[in-house]
Image (tube, rainbow, N blue to C red; front, side, top):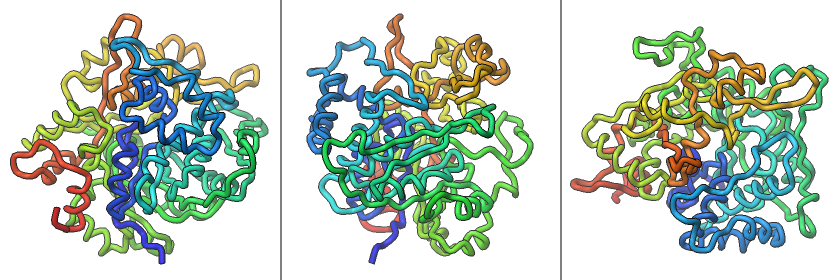
Length: 475
């Protein structure tokens, strides 16, 4: 009988929850999860750096459509790595109707990450996507399913259409996904479509339908998913406002406390008694990174917990070593500080930001950065006066955003998360003036508790230390 995991490792950032971390957690019988956000850019930059260790090559060799894999490899691999201080290759930003090359890049990159995470064991591996990052969904999900992904997790929005996409791909059929377009008429065609047969090099492989877990913050959203989703919802991750990354906005009217952070209240708390009545498994997230909190969640009827921050600073995560070292050192002193920034993310969702010197969280660093939008994962699709779909981002140059119908006040405080999150994992873009993009680290409010996973005198810990501490097993 299939056993649900007690611990789900969070799908964090861009490349923080990488294949190494997911593999380490899944090997231990829990659910390792890779972040599916911007995996195409992560792959391009790994290849441009020369594929250290040859890991990407193994994934490419296993890809079921070899001619497609060959095209991607030939385009982006640089033997020995690009010269230090030079820019990474660029790709066009995603649109409703992507080019074949971009779609192939999405398929291959998601396949490779899942393949490597599954390598060497037989346990399930998951992938986490953001509902807000809609444009890459279809090709990304298909690539992950080609690699045998066991779970698809999605939050940062209401992912009503994803279960049906999983059903269609498992049945070998094309899938559709409705793109959210601001200002579009009700009869406008905003559908995105993906037909696997157009990309296959022979008969389509038979795919297994992964389980789908929706990441929600309220009973209302959970009930809505069960009523209106396009297919079966296998469970929920109930994420509180203390979790890292994007948080659901408070259900109040935008009140901020004296420090400028959103105020959450009773309306933002989940009624677990009502949740249990839904009859589907759920996991608690946001401040649940301890054995005591796991026990508490199980006692409340949860299948387990999702833990992010503790794994983000483990040796296997993709976060840059210097950033890990700085944050773990601060945690050991109990001095790490996290700010829930109500405006940093172009999505409009609050975003947790670690306060670290030399990063984008410093006002001086943010002010010195030239505003540019060249990756575009968090762009908003909108309907133009001449009846077309166009794209804008509140973190792009102010004049460009306003020219596209955006309001100037929506640009204040916005930060380019796309470039910053790639900088977090050691792949910062280098600009024409030689300046590299600054990092911006997101963590949960319980960041100081990661010190509990350190052995006396140690400066780092492994994913296994986290798992063992949560389930109270000897290291």
